[in-house]
Image (tube, rainbow, N blue to C red; front, side, top):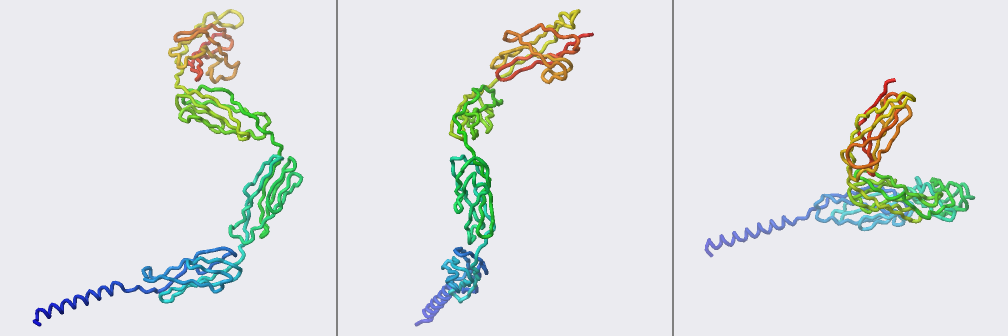
Length: 394
């Protein structure tokens, strides 16, 4: 064998050895160095469960397999996933052990009664018709209390009876009473105020009419529940198109956009309904001014003066106005907010359209100054002209 062949064989053998060493080193096991539990002690009631969580160290240990044991299977058992179940009163030790290295950690489990700390009822007030029955439900706290038994009493057994063990209420006559639930453990209590009535059933409902509303305005609808002495007059409201009109819990309708919508009221008792078609329109109010009044005759007797009132309607509005005239009051007051004195007077002027409208009226000179406004009334509201005044020398 020549030297060159010998060197080649030797080099190949060395490379195989190095590769083998690298492979062995890459597959080396990471040994377990310890184990801990998330709880070192537990207190459970009989029948309760709790899961213990074991943490094997280091996190990258190769073999994290563990086993679980209980020191007293009559008191507490443990499943392979760490689920502890309390079986009877006493103390048991739960131990978790690693398969690799035989490291262990333990948790002392004390199984005892869980005392009641309170009780609540699903209803604290209750109104029943004399022909109805109901059941109260009690919730004992905490949820894992050992003794959850309760009993029921009523302070006025002539009004109703209550099941001693089940909370079933059976009315006997109209009146009021207090129902009390009491826990056997701890004597914790909760109360419900009971009112027994002879219910008058609803027979129908009506609305106060249809409504024409300008967009941006509101209109109050009134539901009339029959009979007038019905026990439960509660109603709910709805709109067929909330993009046109909305309605709140009190029947106040708001016009949102042009169009029509059906407003429906429904009684809580009997589910009776009534409807109202609401038409929402875009509108404009009339534009008008109040012209200076003209004294026609101040008179010589009785303190009377004849005065011509004038107004000028520049725009009749849409829909057009249905009434026009003048409103006036005594003194330096706005007729819309008059001060002391005889109050306001309204006079209507016949006719329609744009332009000047006039009315002769009698004003009393002795009252001194009078303040006047022209007005035009529409289904969407009322427009008023500017304030003008007239006075008489005494």
